[in-house]
Length: 289
Length: 278
Ligand SMILES: [Fe+2]
Image (cartoon, rainbow over all chains, first blue to last red; front, side, top):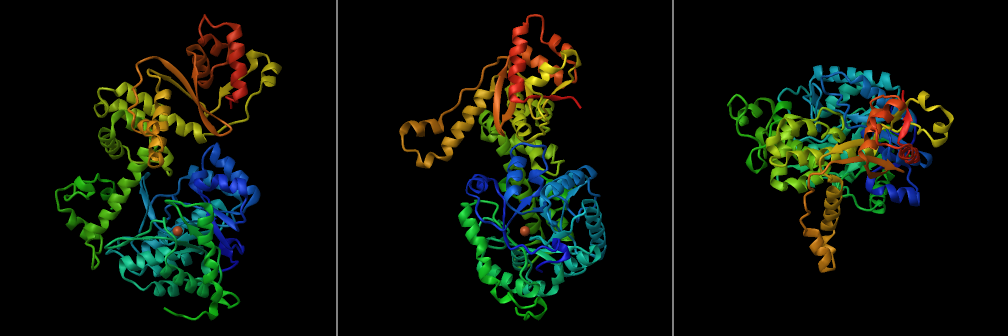
């Protein structure tokens, strides 16, 4: 969606992930970028270079926070001290919304540092939604949850992944960070139609999108974020924007990171795929796939 | 599933074939995970098991280049697996992955024998860099502040990011040499001169035993190492522990002159190392 309650009624365009190898280029050249996404955890420290760079970036750019360790799907309650630190960062960046993943990754305080898929059960949806609400109430900022790419499915699941995503965000009354590449990767790994996924999520709740590159192995796709975006993902993205409207979009490139210009050019390609969605109300979008 | 991800990999970076109770892992995996037309439940769980270990071992490598150079790749890899198996991450950030390494090396010296003392020094020095890089800095006490208050009134503290190390080996020079060599190695494919190529594969001499006092700190957010005299180190350490200035100075020892103290405090305030005690 363009501006909606889940992205703080903003209308951001195409953004980039703020990554260390690009710091000096950005600070020296001040390229025109609509917004930067930061990994919150990288800046939840006491001081030093990370916060210095962040403050310089904040003087010039709009920043949105993306987290990797909230683990909405893990059973444990969010750690108070962690939330306090995160809230201090939210105040610093003035992020209009905050995203993290629909996944689990820690048990009793032991972290895998992975984004692990959940069993898609009603019970898990309820518990996860309660956690999202708790975090949002504490941080006082809209939250978008992101679908992860996955390599395994559980017998315990009672619904499809997109039904589960819909169930969670309705119960939590929160937004979706729709990762189109993750949908594609999972569709190949689990044998579902990615267009069914796109058609099945509550479009009015999509506050942001992710696009990224992945790697093909013999028997599965891996979400590597070390490539340009592949054609089928661009096609899915075009369809997603037709369904949801032109939405704040971010290119993720996290490994084997090329020059800033190369990453930026790749992100701006998104403009070529949102033509069909411009001007048309999202609800009128054709259902294809 | 969580416990199975954290289990160490078997030979060839494969998932272990048996579960803790002796049952075949294929059976255990199949109870919770669905297969697809290309992968069994075992294969799918194995993807996660491998990713977990690769991620943590990579991080352990990145954080400990000096320790790796000292132990050699094989011994270092064994240490990495032993450490990570015993002390999985308890923090939301991988920045803290090696916070327990010093304690682990002390508790299990076999992994680093016969050079455990040196390994501990290098591990402490490398962890200090992580802390010095992004730990909090408070408003520094200036020379003017020092001049304005009577020393007996001053409640000084050392900035949290300043890491004070009393070591048994001069590991700073060693780790710097390793990093330099590793940088050359990374560039070795375009190394044009024979001298540069030789430098890239050079074995770096291990430091000999010698008491060394080092502060790992940052200036304008760049990391620096500074050798300290033992008395200066003791004064700083006492201030960090919460001692009043007069007490801290006494810890410096009888041989310390007023001139030395004046010079040290001038330097420390210039570097911004001192702040007010909360
Ligand atoms: Fe993503």
